[in-house]
Image 1 (spheres, rainbow, N blue to C red):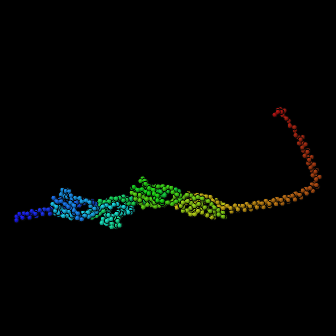
Image 2 (cartoon, rainbow, N blue to C red):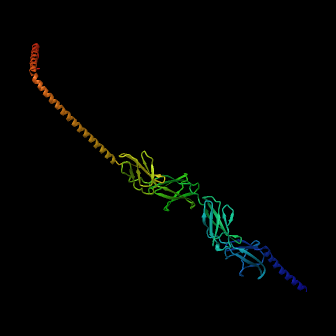
Image 3 (cartoon, one colour):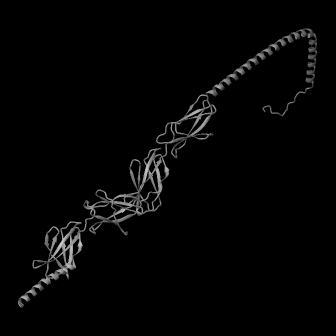
Length: 463
């Protein structure tokens, strides 16, 4: 009996020791020291002389090769699936017998999202979207902005897409984000990416100079670093313009344009490859001058017509200025002037408009119809000639009449003188005879009183 009692005591002690040692495993538990998408590193307290078997939820059992780190045993379980919850049973084995079991669960790390794209952006907000991992709604996601708190994505889902909007951002700024996939409370390693907000537009674009084939544009530079500009015309051709950095105003010349043509442009501010909304504006090149300017007469001599060819390109109107009159505006190619004076010259200036752009002035001198004046002058001249001829005829008749009267008076006087001459002939003869004698006596006395002229004896006869 004593021997039997001793055997029972020894057997009880033997049974108690493995159970007590195994209970230490159960009380200490198994922890997951590290995890990845396909690995789990497990740790538990060391119990001497025990081996271990790990049983999966599908019934598969594998013996574990453990490594000791002091009083801690460590084992790595591999070939697992990402983002999966596993149930395990850990057996403590002693001499081929299972002395204790510990049931626990562990989760592998989920996979990161494949990529994140910017669905929409503005100056102060960014909207991101990404495909769900494995198209599984069991995952949730955390979006973290650098230096800011974490944000969980909302419950807004597409068929296979997750969407999240980040607001209260600054224009033209580059931000760094991380998206974590979360499963069973465990995060993925995180998908890192950067995105920039939209820069602001320039305030306005000025046309500093315009020509028939060029436009010179200028604008104030956006107050931001590392920006450039893209100018897009109506044909969708784009020109990249670098920021100067030294000046606050940027100047750019657009060439190879057509005269009098309206062009549509859009100027974008660019930061980190992201364009602003774009400032759209229009401008018109200078028009060519009016051509084919000419004058036409209207009957009566008090009006005239100014005519010109239709201008090339886009134009909105014409300003016509006659000296001494107010300017007139029209969008045709013909203008009549009335209440003018016949046969006078008038100076007219024409300017072409394309919006607020004024072309070079063109002048011409026009004469009203002179035919009425010429006809009047001819009639006046004919009338004057008629009056002159009439005066000449009248004067001639008067002269002839006076001459005839004079001849008649002369004939009468001649007859009277002839009669008186015959009667007074003896008396006149005696008077003429006595007068002749008197004159001869006076000449004889004058000859007697005259002395002969003496010649100088010393006078050289050859001088």
